Image 1 (cartoon, helix red, strand yellow):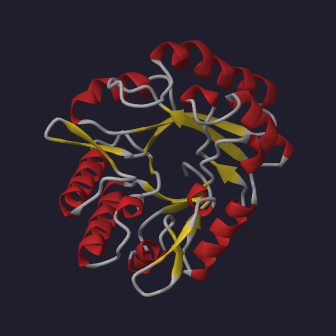
Image 2 (cartoon, helix red, strand yellow; image 1 turned 30 degrees about the vertical axis):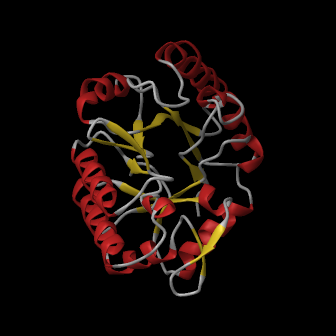
Length: 259
């Protein structure tokens, strides 16, 4: 099994540590085959902590380039960002992609009637549908190589039922149509667990009920990412547990970002 990880953050997002060079150097020390940097990208709304466009061009990209020049013989390095999808930002994504190898869709926020909805806290039946529709629309643009934590909607809406299953199936099927990788996110394993509707202790994400559905979709492409916010998290116990989680569900995991 190859050692790869395409989801890493930096101090530029204001809730992580380190620079791209630090993560890449540590990945080299741990004998990773490939690494992708994908900090939270600059968006056009002033909503929450994200790097600015000037930081993207003046700090983020040059630091990745510095690491590529030093470690190119030891590890394959990709330049990416994790970013939310908004309908009126297409030119923005296209501009960013000129300097990147990939984008990760991380839909932490929704827009409803000019109001911003926090997927971690504000979910209800109406917003479930909005999450589904937003994610599917985003994937159909083909801007995004990976859908981060596709089950994140279950953080704010924790009951698994017919509605949440319908959302899951629609997203899985959209990912298959658009050749998007579905991410089992190890950072969710670092968080608390809950008791689900069946009295079973489960992760908020990766949510067992969601990923169990993937058994019926053998054509879906699944990747495990670490979603690191600190150097000590690279290859930690949560990453090991994420692989165990996939094995327990008999899921086939893709090793590499691209064929």
